Structure formats: C-alpha cells, structure tokens
Image 1 (cartoon, rainbow, N blue to C red):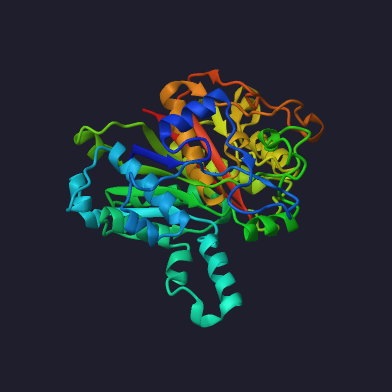
Image 2: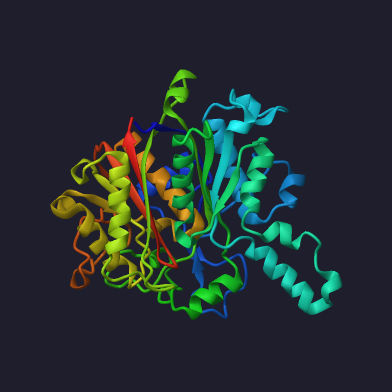
Length: 421
C-alpha cells in the first residue's frame, strides 16, 4: 500500500501577492498582476507586458547579507520556502531543521527551475563585453546556475538530505513536487520542501521569446487583458515570475505531530511528447496519459475530480491542444469538470507555475471556491475550446479531488492530483 503524503505548509511569492492569503484573495477577485514591464526598458520589444512580482522585500525571510549573495530566483525560492516552513509549524532557530522535530538528514529539497539567474547572466555578460574578463564578478557562476535555489533553501533551513533541482522547462515545479512525493513514498525522507521558482523577466529572455513569436504582442496598451486563455482573441503568453513551495510529509507522521494538513498530495504522472522542441503534439495523447497516470497513482476515477487547473497559457497552440488532452482523459465526465487558468492573472511563471497552481488546487479543496479564467469573452469554440473554463467570476464548488498539469518546451508533461482531507 502506498504511503499517503500530506501537505502541511504553503508559501509563495507571486505577481498577485507575496503570501498565500493575498494571492488567493486576488485570484478569487479576478485581479490581474500583469502590467507594463518595469524591470528594464522594454521599448524595443514587440511584447512589453509582464506579470512582475511587486514590492518584494526579502528581509522577513532572510538576512540582507544572505540576499545579496543570491540571484532573484533564489531569493524568491528562499522566501517562499521559509513561509511554508513556518506555516507547517516548524521552528527556525540556531538548530535549523532540527527545530522541525525531524532529523535534518531525513529532510530534503526538490526545487523546479526553468532558466536560472538570467539577471546575473545579463549583468555579468555586459561587464565582460564592456570591460573585459578581469571585470567579470567572481560570483557570476554560483549565483546564476539553476541548482542554487535548492542549495540556498537547504542552507537557509539547515537541511542535510538531498537538495535536487528539476529542470523540465515549464513543467519544472510540477515535476519537483512529483519527485518529492516519490521520495517520501519510498521512505528515503520524512519531509520535503518542494516547489518551483523563476525570475526571468529580463531583456534577454523576453527578446528570445519574442523571436519565437510566443509572447502576447497585441495588448501592450491594455496589459490587464493580455493573458486570455481559451479566448478566440488570445495571441500569446505573458511572462511572469515568482515561487511556490509546499511542505510535504509522511501523512502518519504529520498527523502524529498534530500538524495542520491542507490536503493529500495523492498522485503524479509524467510523460514526454517526443514530438517538437516548442510545440505540443496536436494529438495530445501523451499529455492525456500524464493526467491518467496521476489519477491512477492517486487511486482516483475521472468522475471523482471536480476541478482542473489548466496549464492554459493563452497561446494559439496550447489551449485547443490542452482542451483535447482533457477530453481524452476525462471522457464523458469532461462536461461536468470545472476548469480554469489562473495564468490569466499571474501570467506564465515558467518553472514556478506548476507549484503556484498546485497551491491553487489545494486552496480550492480547502475553501470550496474556484478561481476564474479572466478575459474569457469569446471562447475559441471554432478550435475546440468549448468546456467550462469558469469565465471571469469565481464560483463556489465542492470537490473531493483536484488536478493540475504543466506542459513544457521539449514535450514535458507533468500532472499532480490532490485529495481533500
């Protein structure tokens, strides 16, 4: 019999709030975090909107000296992890992870990240080109490489189990949580700090996505309307940033210590399209199989799932393909399924998105409220987008299980299933 895995702590940094309560309230109100780019001068780009984190101050979660030794994606990861750690009822003191009551060797980190410290890369490359190699900052490589978020979380919390990094593009956060579930079920660990982080709103990243024709370009003067999943007038995704982190524990041990348990992290499925570097397979077979694997892993039938948080990127290719994927998996139940894309408000936070959307599923189970897909004015029925995407207004809806999926460049498909406790 599979061990049950409890979610006992939540933390996040996002474009619509820098804690779980403000994030959740913003989503239920249908408030968008998308605006004109402020991180750099985007005037030369075709796409000039993004979902930036606002008013981020790392000091509640880490020492200022620590923060200066981290790229922004690491700061976001540490901030979200410390929030989740505290939310799980664990102590922070000189003993670090020992304040949890668990041995530090039995605690791990699984952090998803798509790109790493692009802000550091750009700053350092500029100095290299302008002043030569002698002027390159000595900490360039340690700050920018993708694994440093997991490393910094482990150092901040004094965790001595494995600190892994999943890099599967936009599926990274989802796959990191899935990896954590497997580690806990195997008995290798008692607790895992799991999630995803990203801070890639930079000139280099946005210019690259613009060359791929992936970003929204038609709403530069109307940024709040730019991300419009499943709508016929969508024209690309809006890049976002942030971090989401879950504390996952063996259910029996969490119960024994009297922990608050939000939900069960019940199932995980992953596949690869093996089709194209950037485009999803239009047949949606492997994406649907990832969903079915997550359901099977959780011991769920499709009819038991009431809510699905969509990858829902607002791109011409993703939305009809994902809709077909959902139909393949849920079959006759699909017309009863409630679906929404919170990327309509948060933008696409790349490696962080799966973790943020896992938190959405967990809060939906806890509260009985489902956030909307905003900007859905004219569903793209001509291309098959004809399901219930919860348009524009949150709804009350009780369900015993929720599913989320993340689909990444390279054909990576990851899915998570959560059960109400």
